[in-house]
Length: 115
Image 1 (cartoon, rainbow, N blue to C red):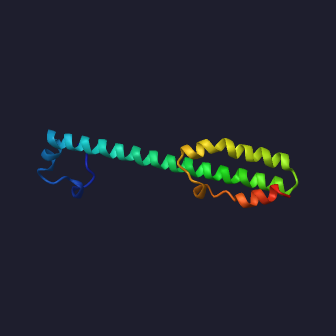
Image 2: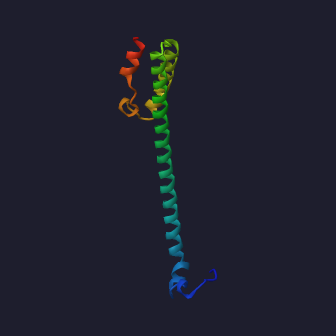
Image 3: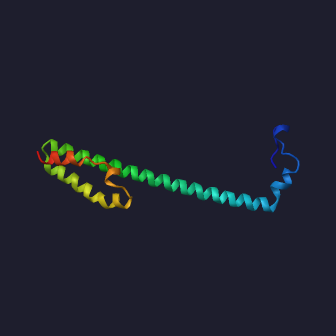
C-alpha cells in the first residue's frame, strides 16, 4: 500500500483482505482483459469509420476536380480525374460503401462532360 494523505482516503476494514484475495485478482484480470478487448474493438471501429470518411472525402474531392475541369473546358484533365474515381471503385466497394454513402454528383459530372 502507498502512504495515504489523509484518514478519509483509508480503505475500510476488511477491504484489504478482499482486494488481496486470489479470486478477486482473477476477476479483476478477466475484467481488465475484457476492458482491453472492448477498447481494441472500439479503436478498430473508430479507425474503420475514419477510413470510410477519408474514402468518401477523397471521392467527393476527385469528383469536384473532375467537374471543375469539365466546366473549365479541360476535358482531358476531367477524364483523368474520373479515371482516378474508377481506380477508387474497388476500395470503396471493399469498404462496404454504397453510391448513396459516397454521394458523388454524377449528374453534374455528366453535364460538365457534355459541354
